[in-house]
Length: 187
Image (cartoon, rainbow, N blue to C red):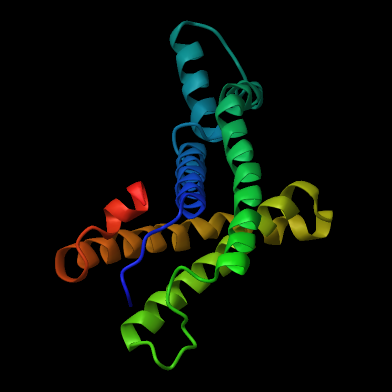
């Protein structure tokens, strides 16, 4: 694959999507660990009992949800932003063509076709993630549970893609094309 520079629009979309994904994964991690309703409720109950007070686990859960709500709102805002950026990225791809090798082009090497396949899979899964997030909020009630399961599981592919992405950048920088990371920052 020939060396190329990335235009400003491509770089802004790339880094904006990356920031949204970091916020989404970070808030999801906090939500299932320290800021999870059950975890916080348990801490609230333990500490109120420590000071001689009493509270039910149900009341503590309500308080816990209120404590975590501002953090969780960031997840929604980043999700809304990601939907918009995803649509813009697809439009950008449609206008400017793929910025990665085509997985269907027989002239590309197996490595290039694999790389292209990973990107296509990423954009497909990102679309599914944004769709299931929207369905959880606005979809038919009968779809919400399934959407929630799929949406929750999406962090696994995101983590795998991030590792593949950074690994690919490192291999490219070290062994193939020096400066590719700099081109994504500076153009």
